[in-house]
Each structure stands twice: as C-alpha cells, then as structure tokens.
Image (tube, rainbow over all chains, first blue to last red; front, top):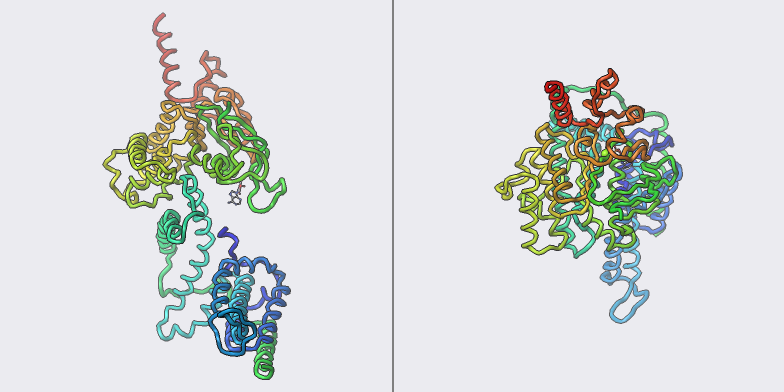
Length: 268
Length: 287
Ligand SMILES: Nc1ncnc2c1ncn2[C@@H]1O[C@H](COP(=O)(O)OP(=O)(O)OP(=O)(O)O)[C@@H](O)[C@H]1O
Ligand SMILES: [Mg+2]
C-alpha cells in the first residue's frame, strides 16, 4: 500500500537526534552523503553502515520502517547489480562459466553502488524521521537566506516546500479514496502489462490532479484573505538557535567522517 | 432469502485487533430484496465504514458477509461478482469523474464489466435518462457541468452498472433543495420502479422518513436499532439520547396529540401532513 512508504514522515520522539537543530542535521546528512560518494573502500562502507545503524538505535526507530522505503526500488537495484556484474570485464576473473565471468572489480563495484544507494535512503530517511517538516523547511530557509541578496526568492521557496510537505498526507488520503471509488466501478489495477497498467492510472491520477488544483486554489484564497503577500516581512513563531548539543554533535560527527576518510586513504 | 446479510461483522482500521479500536463491532442484520433502508447516526458512528463492507472495499476483521446468498470473501471471483451486484456511490462522487466526455465516464463501469459496445451504449442512455439529464449532455466535458449535474452524472455511472443493490453515502450533501430533491427522486425511482434494494446513508431524518421502509441507527460503531420507520419514530426519546431527531412535522403531531387533538401519529412528511389536515378540515366542514 502507498501508506507503507514512509519517506518524508516524522516519527515522534525525544532522542538526541530529535533535539538537534535542523541545520545541524541537514549539514550532517549532506556531508555524510558526500562522503558516501567519495569513499571507495568496502571497509569504510561497513563503517558508515554501522554508524547509521547506531543512529537508528539511538533514536529508537525500527529498521522495518526504512526497509519499507527500500522495497519499491529493490527490483531496480537488483537489476542494475546483475547488469554490472555481467558487463564489467576488467580485473581478475574469480569465477567463470560459459561466456560469463565474474571479476573481482565487478563484484567490488556492484557492492559499492548497492551500499551507496541503500545508505543514501537510510540517511535521508533518518533526517525526515527525526525532523518535523516545518523545522526542515525553516532550516533550509535559514541556510539559503544569504541568496536573498541576489534576489533569490528564499521565503517563497520555503513556503512552497512547506505547503508541498503539508499536502502529501492529504493527497495520499485522497488517492486512497479515489482508488476505492473507482474499484467500486469495477476498476482493476493489478492486471495487464506495463503500458496497460500505466493507462490504468488515469482514472486515479486525473481526479487526483483535479482535486490538487482545487485545493491549491482554495489555499491561495485562504492565504490572501489572511493578508499573505509575496515579499512581505514576516517573523516566525519558533526561531532556530544552535545549542551546545549541536556543537558537540557536529564536532563528533566531523571527527568520525575524518576518520572514515583516513581509513579510506590508508587501508585500500 | 435476504439479499444482504451481515453476521457479527467487526472492523478496525490499521493493524490493531483490540476491541476498543474497532470502528464498527459485532454488526448483524438482514436486508430483504427490494427494501429501502436508511442508515443514520452521529458523525463518526461508523456508517461509511459499514457500507464499504457491502462492496468489498473493506474486509471485515471478523464476521461474514453474504450478498445474494454468497459469502463475498470466499475467493477472488466472489469479490468481483459482488462489485457487480452492489453499486456504491461514495460521498462527493463528482470527484471521481475523469473522462473527457460524460458518455465515456458513465461507460467506464459497464465497460469494466466486459459488456459489448451496443450494451454499453444502451446502458449509458438509460442511466442518463434515469438521472433526469438531457442526452445532449453526453458529448460534454464533465468538468464543465454544475455541481449538481456532476453528481448526477457520477450516480449515473453507478446506475449504468445496473446493480442489484444501490448503496449511497450521503448523496445529497452540499446540494441546493432542488438538486437534493432530484437525487432523492432518482433513488426512489430505482427502488420502486426498478424494484432494487437501496441502502441510503444520510444525516437527514426528513430524507429517510419520506421514502425508506426501514431505518438502521448506528451509534458508536454498533447498531442501536433496526426497525420500520413507524416503530423507530415511536421511540423518539431513544433517538434524542444519541443526538438524533425525529422529523419536525412528526414532532408537531406529537405535540398536537399531547394537547388532546385526535390526530394520527404516522405522519413523517409534509405531504402526508397535508393530507391528514385536509381530511380533518373536510370532516369539520361537512357535518
Ligand atoms: N481511514 C481511516 N483510518 C483510520 N480510522 C478511520 C478511517 N476512517 C474512519 N475512521 C474512524 O472510524 C470511525 C467511523 O468512521 P466513519 O467514517 O465510518 O463514520 P461516519 O459514521 O461515516 O461519520 P460521518 O457521518 O462523519 O461520515 C471514526 O471513529 C473514524 O475516526
Ligand atoms: Mg461517513
């Protein structure tokens, strides 16, 4: 079901990660992802993986949730892995059969890609699990604030992001309702090939779009009637501030990442 | 044989199996063929949840559902067959319209049933006539219609599937009195003239009192009462205890009776009241 996908969902809690400033978390996540793409030693991936597992343990979020996010892309992941394994020919052959041969490079490369993508999902999910969408956008807004100097519409973009996030659950509910309604008109989603299935989405997607536009219209009217104005001066109810905890966390995290890079450089 | 039979049906949203989380619990009732049943109850009492079971949209966490004598959850074929037998009109059905013409949209259901093109055309023509819209609308884009017209097109989409049991969830909500009247007449027509079973969820006692044979009252996920219209209204205090009301006109007659007037009590609609009053006046005039 669509409900099982939990990307962008917040899990209530009061762990260290929950209490961090959103900016700390965003920057940490971004640097973690950068690190993922820069390192190329398998041991470092194992290290990164355990690091993320520790974080999941700390904030008490079950791995089942994030595994649900991995599930939809698993087929693609496995397919690319298989293609990689077959296509990459350099390196020494470890195993060969008929025209196929597996080289050590191929195995290494495939594992790297696999780890990267899985860890990408794990880390970005962790960010949204522990940060309220409003805090997330406020964090982003603060971080790109300097761009306002070159007339970049920072506030408007932040508002757009928070509205988009706000309406994800609403649209999911709406989609479920529409699916039910079309089902009772004999609509059958599960059969047929790819093209046929894509065509099948029309009875769901079209009403969903109509409904989304209608909501957007209504929201615009509601905002304007409360005097929302592009470029207006606004203050916010909650202000963000870095605390001691953020400094400790950032330093600790930086230390760990540096260590990972060092290991990566020395132990190939 | 009852056309609809529920046997100790319970349903809980989410994964919880605990009794206190059930949206409906331990529901059993029977509806005979050709009956018009009104379902009424406080908001959140489980009406929508209940009727989604009639159409296999929700699977009961426990209990059995028999439609037309068939245990609907027996296998895939019985579920598909059930969707043919039962036509469910959701709340605000106009939001499900998606085709570029009214004709195509009404034809969506019949086509899914696998009918021939001729049969589909016949069904569409009949359905649009049943809902009282001119066939010149068939070529129009459904998004260009008025709210009331859209709703009637959506209902026509269900009627075109020719369901043995028509189930409607608050079909008149958000319409003007004229639009409301039209919808109620469509439902009555389908019940009386086509002799089909109707289950109609509403918040309006007045609507139910006019055409329904029986009233099912839901309260807190359970059935509070399921009885004929007369018997139900006789227990006005029970209705008030769960925040429901008897029709205003019925209350007027209750008060009249209290004051010592000799009036009948089976008056639930303005039309009936008019007849009764006329009757009384005539009796008075002619000695
Ligand atoms: N999708 C859902 N997920 C979880 N709980 C739900 C869901 N839909 C309904 N419920 C719960 O089930 C109960 C019954 O809801 P239901 O929609 O059947 O009430 P209703 O009688 O139709 O109310 P209304 O008159 O407002 O339409 C409510 O307590 C509601 O909170
Ligand atoms: Mg309801």
